[in-house]
Length: 455
Image 1: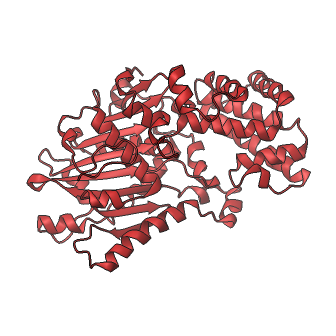
Image 2 (image 1 turned 180 degrees about the horizontal axis):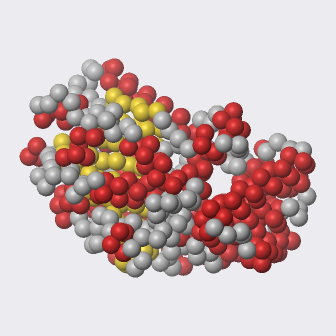
Image 3 (image 1 turned 45 degrees about the vertical axis):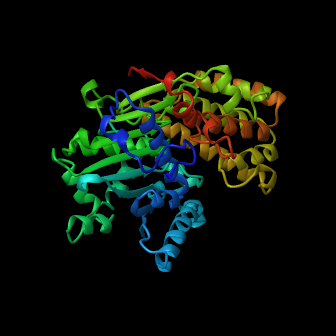
């Protein structure tokens, strides 16, 4: 009996799609596999992958590298079985642990919060002495510091500085990501990811790279692949899929944007229009219709507030407009009672449910709002070299204030995040609805509706 992915039900064993993969004309099977790999980078549920023949799994969480997850050759190898069970759970736990002291110091020195990259690497022997190496880059986590890299908009080398740093963080582990099973099969003492990447610069490489990521992971994917190509990695040896991909470049000529990646975007998803101003790779778009939205956004589809916020974010076409909208929201929060604004901030900093948010002193709420407004203005200046446009911020503030007349700040903020999450999600979490999130839907049910989107 075959081993299949939880979301798309595609085979994790049969990689026959690799031979005919073309980033400019992607296959349904490859896209489904890429989505399963992107999901693996979130949940680290490695059991099915190990059963499908994948092994030598390494998980990076921040600056930690957890290694030693391998295929079990004998049922009596209890030590390896326990390790295979423990390490993914530890990695998952580490992705949600936050250090309050580091966060507080990070308010003054953001560099303390940069080391938040997460990824998973694994290998599978194929026929004829060949191997597939899979790399999944994780999207933005739920800790406050996980968002810091997204807002580092400097791009002196035409690449988003925050995503480039996360790429470098993964690269720093290349010589420590070890493939002992492959080394044994090849009759060499040691084989690392660094060795694999060097061989992929040669025409006759025995390795094929399958790389995927969602959201921030899709951003890091673009930068990583672009850097590797610049070092000589040959396009024939890489199969890359990004889902909900932000833009990572700015000011590049058309030939500089060429990268052997397929980037899947939903036109409902605001995050695919933010970051900088250019994608690296071939963009394939999906235009949601009413039927899709009723299925994918089912939990709030009949709620009027959802439609009002959906219309608001649909008008945001780029990162500059997004920052103006956020600043308008923060200024509108200044006009509501501090207690109400404090409850709304519970959602903004993503620490706990608003109904459990402990009351904050009014001056604390005021200080937080001022700090957040100052940060957004700084981001805008770094991005554009200009101050935030007063008239446009005022218009955004008025739009939010009109909503605040009819809805509480807490309710408005909760629905704002719900709308962003639903339109951006990789897979559904409810049993039987795994493929009804935007990106799982498009590779399972809506693949024939995808179309190439010009830059």
